[in-house]
Length: 167
Image (tube, rainbow, N blue to C red; front, side, top):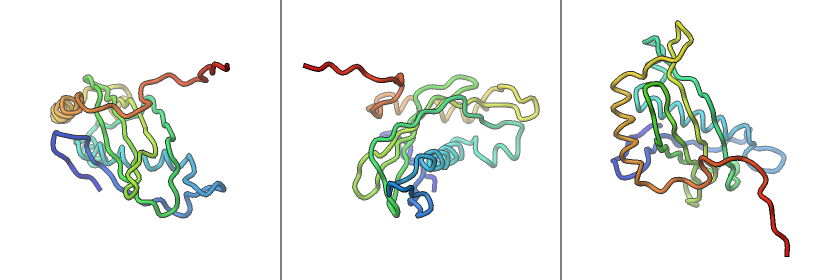
């Protein structure tokens, strides 16, 4: 499910329910399925901006993910309905920096974040290629409308162990 929103908030791109087969021995969503769900949100986002599966099938262009980070904030369980919002932080002629947030629909908490950098690629040359102008225009509008939104927690940070000070 993809839907566009007005310019006052993130792009609401996807909703999906946690399936029984995705639950691990801890009784919550297995970490591998967070990536699957975020991939579904990415597909929906690219459909909205005109770089999705239809675009890839009908042109020489497609997208490859260069880097991705997932932060697991709260557990979700079988049957939970999830909502995915997308924020565009930056882009250039060939790359897009964006993030998805996963929200528990009924309890209204943020369960996870997924930050990504994607590259637009020529399928025939297997090299970076310019993003079409129509998608760049949409990305510009999204970036401008998202720049004043509060950035989801934990994005653009370095992984590592923080030193604890003990008294």
